[in-house]
Image (cartoon, rainbow, N blue to C red; front, top):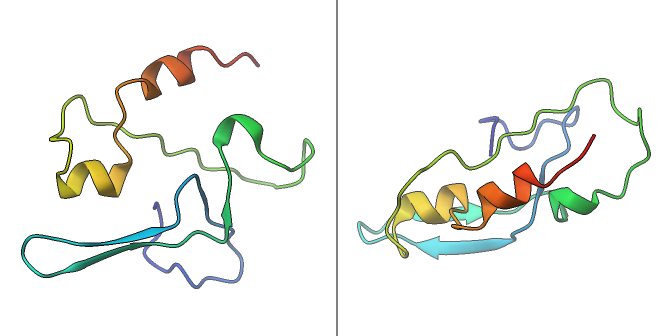
Length: 87
């Protein structure tokens, strides 16, 4: 997620996941967006927001069960999903 203040009432957090993980060092990784939705089918009409921040996964490689893959939702097919978008 892009912002540190996940409770900011001026912000809506959207992600395809709602999950939590226990990392190998004992820390918790919690991903709990305001709404769970795929970025290819966002349920808002055009111009609903003044600003939209799209922060796609930016890893080239990650271990399948690594904390980075969990944090940034690393999937090999994600790049192709982004490239297939038309505006």
